[in-house]
Amino acid sequence: MVSSIINSLGFGSGIDTKQLVTDLSNASREPKVARITTLTQQNQTRISALAQARSDLEGFADSLGQMVSDGTLRSTPTVSDESVLTATSRAGLSADSFAATVMVTQLARAQSSYSGVVADRTAAIGTGTMTLTVGGVAKTITVGATNNSLNGLADAINASGAGVTASIIADEGGHRLILKGPSGEANAFTLTADAGADPGLNAFATGGGMTLGQSALNAEFTIDGVAFSRASNIIDDVVPGMSLTLKKAAPGQPVDIGASRPLDMIKQTVGDFVSVYNQLKKSLSSAAGLSGSTTSLRELERELAGLVGKVLSSHGSINKLTDIGISTTKEGLLAVDEAKLAKVLETDAGAVEALFNPRRDGAHNETTDPGIAFALDAIRDKAIATDGVIDRVSSSLKAKSETLAEQLEKIEEREDAYRARLEKQYGSLDARLAAFKATQTYLEQQIKLWTNQGND
Image (cartoon, rainbow, N blue to C red):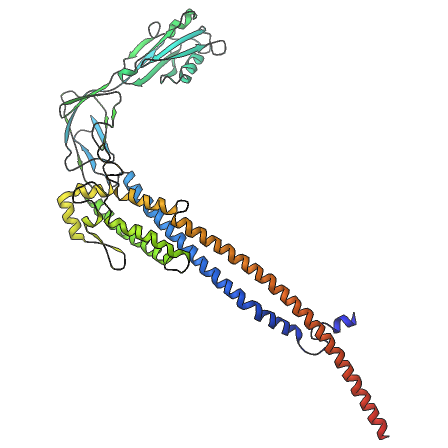
């Protein structure tokens, strides 16, 4: 125990070997750890810059796409009498040239039929099969021992997929079965009891015990004198870019429809587009400006810069952002020539709107008229896709982070081993020095003793 204490670092020799070991191990470890720490911090800075650039890109594309999809940039339909019909906009409306007169002579409606009063909706009504025919398509309705009731018949009709809805309503003295089909005269339906069915089922046949509530009709209307007939009161396929909802029949009562363009919103959107683009450009430049794998983001920067000169619509002369006064500065940012934008809006506002809210009809599609939102989505999707530039850079930075962590772990393992070797080496040296010192003290004592004896 005494030997162990004496041989502890620094106790035997008088030299502070413990501090010496600490200083030597720190001198070896600290530069290596500091280098890895610096590299890790630099890599984390790149990861943060890339995450910001991706967030800005996705936010830019999503917000612009939302403005297009929710109709913020679309021309707004106008209707002279909304008690007769209403209108909402869809992609494709050309507001400059659109104006029409609509006359609604008949609304579309669905056939309905109802049964006589049944005292108990759970009582047996008879078993067998019935045939439900809608628009020439027949479905078999089976009433058996497990569903022999008014409830069971209604459930079987609803489960048939025929498109007819069966409901049971309370009436004086019991309940009635009500059947309602889809709107439109082509969707008229019949329900008949098949041969061999119990006679009681005839009470629920449309040609027997059921009473016709109303017949199925088409909506009938004219647009500028041209007659149309549709199965629904919601008309999406007649006026490009506009959905009409017919609300009441009004023969002889013309209704004027047109559209007004949101010029102020378009101006604001152009300005917002430039501002958000510039923010994205700055975040990308910040990430791409860092050394290492993030420099490949220059590829994405070039694609975004190409948006300014990209053809976005099929208009003959106003089909690019440069045509409406958007230009690129020497710093790579965008700027708006307000005077040029105002002049283009005055000359052909529809062409400006089409850059942001492209038409969609037989002659205009995502290839001929992509619009800025679709073009930006394509750049975003390509960048964040598997093996896209952002995915590649992200994978590279993640791998670098893992490699640095492994290197740091190995450095710590090697430095711990190095310190252990130093402690062992200097512990042995300390023991030897202590022995030498003890020998020196013994000799000094002997010499002093011999000297004193000689003097005597």
